[in-house]
Amino acid sequence: MKNYYREIIFGIFIFAVIGNIIIFISSMKLSTEIHTFEQKTFVLKQENIQLEKEMADTESFLHTKEYQTKWGFARATKPIYVSDLPIALNTKR
Image (cartoon, rainbow, N blue to C red):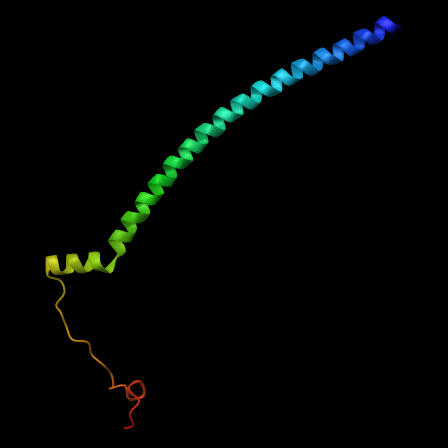
């Protein structure tokens, strides 16, 4: 009977060791996958930052004004006011 318990405990121990090895190997595979995903994410973030900069550059007023003057689409005009803004100037009509 004593020998029977010893074999059961030894079997459980071997099963636990093999299970631990399998879990360790699978976690190593997962860590390499996580590392590759992090590298891909980093590359995508850098591309996203570059695209945001390009988008901001093309949407900026200075950039469009430069192209307007370069290609002659716009002329310098005086601003047109609807009224002389008496409230803003704090004067009475």
